[in-house]
Length: 407
Image (cartoon, rainbow, N blue to C red):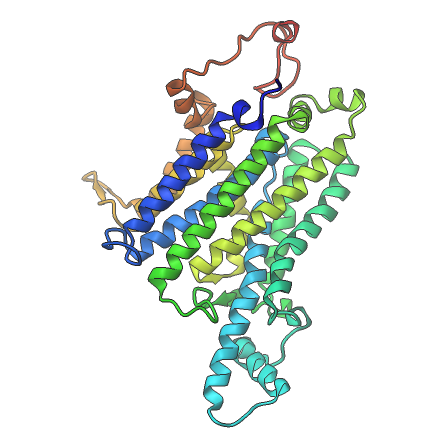
């Protein structure tokens, strides 16, 4: 009998079980459903961390498995946040306008004009731009969360892959795309309030709940999305499709000569991971409460690659481990919880030195522990690397050797 998906991928069950236990424990210790051992702000931090784990899975799928080092996936993450943020800000402002009207009825046009003045008065405007046409419709904005980043990735990927741009040149192009989008959104004419961004996103319209409960609900939603993203990605990389994209990573020319449409595979993975990143962003920013173009700066996508490298690229659970570890440790260092380190001649303030520490960690992991944190899982599970021998059959570190291919 042919083994099933879960029997071939026991890590999926382990991951889902750990994620379920983690979510349950946080819920029972929260202010909303327990004694309040874990604060509401910490629950939000953990919910946001799960969203970062989801985009890390997307990054691992496109880089660790397909070999495309994208330095632009945080652009899709931010676009997803902007799409849902438009609805959140529109509906919250609409409630404020209607409440201030009192007993005087307002026409739909008057309400819309008042909303435009409230939202864009800070940038010297009063009219809602055309891109806000469907901002009052939750189903449409949810659809845009998928369509807008997906369409951008599809167009960009088609233009890049059909020209057979690869390697560092493709990475530079993705970074340039992110920078161009970020600079455009900084302009007030973009219709998204420029440098001010969208704020007040933590207040969910029509949701009669305090922050204690809504933070836990977002934690559930983030955990559910992460579980679905992990299962979907594991299903993709475990079958024939996964073998093909790993072959593209190891030796793209060889796969092309075998007759596989390499560009089509790469375009599919690039677009799919962009959509996954956008969904993660749509869940992240309502928990953060604000989004601005600075969130889409190229450095954010570089951090994303660092997370995956520290966790261990080419392993989905490694990407999750890397993102979770760096996010939690970053919150610890930058939140002022770590005491300064006096050296006599100089005092190390970890708030300022955290990024240096992160960069050094990336260098050390790359040089000394290529498997990253996921290598610890291999040790605990007694997973051994395949025997290496012969001439490499591909440029990637994980590619087959001649001796392996004959076994």
